Structures are given as structure tokens and as C-alpha cells.
Image (cartoon, rainbow, N blue to C red):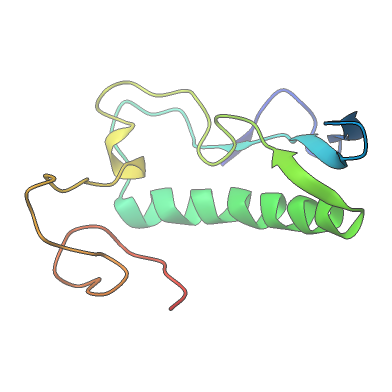
Length: 124
């Protein structure tokens, strides 16, 4: 895997206190990290490889989000492409995506994860 040009050891983490009303306030965190990028390829990787890469990035984000929450952050903003990066063609991005069933399909992934194509990750 390739890391982005932003060094992996460097992260931007800011806690911001915002006044919402006269007495209400909250702490928000903005987090940026060096996304672990897939190797540049013209051939799509397997869905398993894509999930492994996304899980590496999720582990990094999870640690940062927990740290922000422990410091009182109620809203945490993460990068748009923090899970899989941005260097894709239409063909190579496919393993990183999940099928979304037609709205007419009567299927709730968290209740019946094996009926569809989505790998459901639900806490029931």
C-alpha cells in the first residue's frame, strides 16, 4: 500500500468550541490523516484487498475519534476520502463500493445480512 504525500506520522487534529446559543456550546474536532492509499493499478483489486485497506484506515480513524471524544468532542469531522483514498478509475474503484438494493426490495441488512450483497456490520 502507498501512503499519501502527507506524512503518515503527521496528523492535524483541532478541537474547536462553538457557541450555539446563549448558554449552549459544544466541542467539535476536525481530523486529517495520511490516508493509506491502494497501489496504483489499472486492474481492480479483490474486494478482500479493498476491505483490508479500508480497515487499516478505519483503525486509524477510530483511534483519533476516540481521542477526540475523550477530550469532549461532540462532533468529529473526518476527511471525505479517509477510508479508501482518491486515485481510482471507474473500473478500479468498484471493489471499494457496496451494492445498494433497490428501494422496492424488502430487506434490512442488519436483520438479515446474508440475503443481500452488502456485508452488514450492525450492532444489534
